[in-house]
Length: 250
Image (tube, one colour):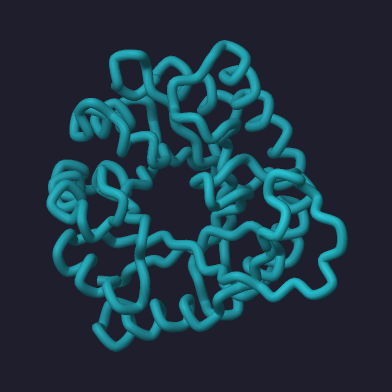
């Protein structure tokens, strides 16, 4: 079994680190501390440009706000417009999006509208499913509205803690849809996660705090003294890849 590797990135440097390490794909987003939000088209476009010839494919997160997955009418419009506008920056990238209804099930109506904007490009239902009232039922909805892939931690903060649900989702999905596991994955647990769940794709971020010299005047009075600068954690990406190779999973 070959396990695919996706790195969640917020900069061109992070994207290049993933590509150079042999990652199969990158998910382009911003503000990872909030779980990721929609990136700007400039970043999406430049990542596409730099990825040509590397064999690494791009997906783009479309998530308008960090406040959960039950969206207002305006937020639903933003999701649809972002999906359309980001196609200008990269008309080959898959879209990663997700929403829930008030009853906690997948918002199939909105996802149908999102899929209609994609012109055949891949749709991933993201970790909104981890907040669903019934995850196996939400998975069946995802299959029903044509998602090709679901990104999930198994309903836990860390994917390894959600291993039982991840295994259940993998078994329920069969060959109908891909289950990608994400959240808290690192070189020390990735093999155990794969062996316990049967997932064939793992997703993780790889950035670390960067030293910021001569920061000058703070850009946020409420967060003065806080350093938000990050840089690629190349060792983490290589560590995950090497662990999978040693286990015969790549």
